[in-house]
Amino acid sequence: MTTFTVRDLPDLADTTAIVTGASNGIGRSAAHALAAAGAHVVLAVRSAERGKAAAAGMPGTTEVRVLDLADLSSVHAFAAGWDGPVDLLLNNAGASAQSLTRTADGFELMFGVNHLGHFALTNLLLPHLTGRVVTAASQAERRARLDLDDLHWERRPFKTLRAYNDSKLANLLFTAELQRRLTAAGSRVLAHAAHPGLVATGLYPSGGRRPSDLMLALTLRLLAQSRDQGALPLLYAAVADLPGDSFAGPSHLAHMRGAPRLIPRSATAQDPALAARLWDVSEHLTGVSFPL
Image (cartoon, rainbow, N blue to C red):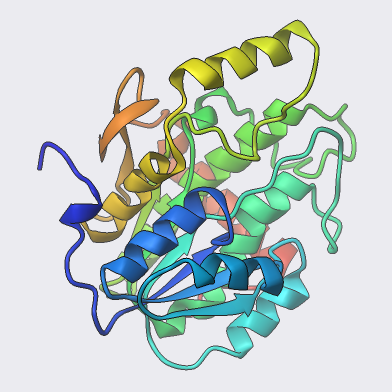
């Protein structure tokens, strides 16, 4: 398939999809598209009120459940309350912070939400999963310098972009090791990652007057895709005929815009030893292990 739009989604009747961070941004667009294709979509969101407002504008059948990925007790409660199969888990929610911020469990916020929260959620839901896990990653992983000995910036001076990049590298390493474990366990569940491209969402800081802030604002104004377009790589990874551990992203402008296709990732993101080490550390930090 040379192009992919929401019109290429198959009939998803009788399927259930969980979308984290579905009350706004790319997650809201993805949830809307899946519901329009017939899926029963569960909006897994921090705010039930905002989730219900988002669901009210969606077609088909939707459901709102509270999930705070910055609090492992909320992740456990969400998973414990689940009953029945899950055809698609879309790990979309993301956090950004301009200063060092910690989750309820003491993790650096971006690593804690973007990776550890989704790591715990996925493993807790795996016994219910029948189809795919798609995790929102980013080409920002190419600028990561993941320090497994100081993941929560307790010894290093905090750097916002570095922390975000590290969390996105963790998303790809998680996807690779998850697929390796699924295959070894004989599971048919597939794990994929997706890069939305350049999309003007709340993850980018706004309102600053520094030259770098103004340059970012100009770049977003000139080059950013819509949120609906940014959701396409995640939807593509959710339904296209792809091998396990695929990485989808936009096809043009250095993978910042355009129809989704498979895109490359850094050598570090393909390091099986690093992926295995990160998995072990993540199990230790969350207390959640691979269940199959």
